[in-house]
Amino acid sequence: MNVLLVGRGGREHSIAMKLYESEQVDQLYAAPGNGGISDIAVCTDLDEMDIDGLLTFAVEKAIDLTIVGPENPLVAGIADKFHKAGMRIFAPTKQAAMLEGSKRYAKEFMQKYGIPTASYASFTHAADAKAYISQIGVPVVVKADGLAGGKGVVVAHAIDEAYRAVERFLAADHNQGSTSSIVIEECLEGPELSLMAFVHGSNVYPMLPARDYKRAFDHDKGPNTGGMGAYAPVEDVSAETLERITNTVLQKAADGMKKEGHPFTGILYAGLMMTEEGPKVIEFNARFGDPETEVVLPLLKNDLLQVLLDVLDGKDPQLSWEPKHCAGVVLASAGYPEAYEKGILLPDLTPEDSVIIVHAGTRITADGLVSDGGRVLLAGSRGDTLTEAINGVYGWLERRHIQPERFFYRRDIGQIVLAEDSAV
Ligand SMILES: Nc1ncnc2c1ncn2[C@@H]1O[C@H](COP(=O)(O)OP(=O)(O)O)[C@@H](O)[C@H]1O
Ligand SMILES: [Mg+2]
Image (cartoon, rainbow, N blue to C red; front, side):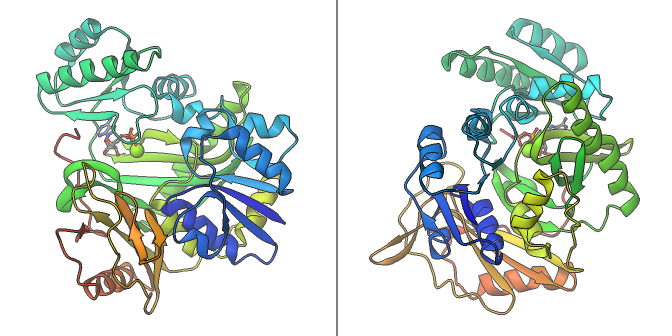
């Protein structure tokens, strides 16, 4: 079979590595891919958002299945276009992707179907939003409605900080010419958890739970990032709780979307907070999480292509997992998530022992492999215990002798940290 993978990050390299193991994949194409993906797939220089270009390419290369990594093309309707052309794609339609594409839509949907989440109100006018904030007080969470690439949420501990977020998000929306909307949420407390599932209509097949680390620095300090590390499975959450999340969140969401007339096909990702009142949804994503995917897929025993085909055919893919642990630590460019330099020569990336190197922002040049993004790569490792997996990653990273003026990584991946500071 010919497969096309859309995307260029660590998530996509991880998916590509898994597909590379499949005997059913004859040719794997990636658009646009990265310095790691190009080792195992034919990369084509098409942007993720060039949906017409991707469709033409898929038809030309007789692609049997297209897999989409990032959210933007989903929300832009890549699945709808492929369906119309009779091409198979494992992705939600534009309407189904609204679960991720609009925080307001997701909140209204959760309320309608009784899915546990933080209480909220949504606003289009700054004055109303501020009046509401002054009434409920801080801490409070302010969220931009649309896709914001991880920059659309502020957990405010002071009223004026919340006000500033209101102004900023509404102004940004105005600038883009879209309907401005913000969501104001009750601030929840507790450890976070990510649970992803393969979904097709009412069929829901959960993966292993994962925990990711979004803040730039140790102990959850510093600005939010695309993710600085992750591990799976999450042992402080019982099998019973996972079943409860599957039933009260994932299954309810799948059933609800079907009732809405927008059945969901693809990866449904629930970001959860384990509060004293039980698990509550922070957000839904309509695709594989990054970097969760990089620590979950290495534990999947099944052939990933077969899983996706089975799910699309309405068959139970019979997911089976290694009884192991996987941890991943992101190596980022100094300065990330603010300004950083690109094109810096990377250290020797030969994997040792059980270490898996997942490329995120890398590029091959005549001089060798260089950095090409804020998040450069993820070093992952499997182990019989989480400690073993963590030690495997940090041992490898220490032997790289990373120069702090070039790259950095968090040293506390694997520990439980509770978010406290505001995310600006
Ligand atoms: N209601 C909430 N209470 C406390 N923290 C929250 C709440 N909503 C979001 N957060 C924090 O902000 C982070 C980002 O929010 P999220 O809704 O996942 O937005 P996105 O991933 O689109 O940036 C979460 O991972 C969590 O740490
Ligand atoms: Mg999130």
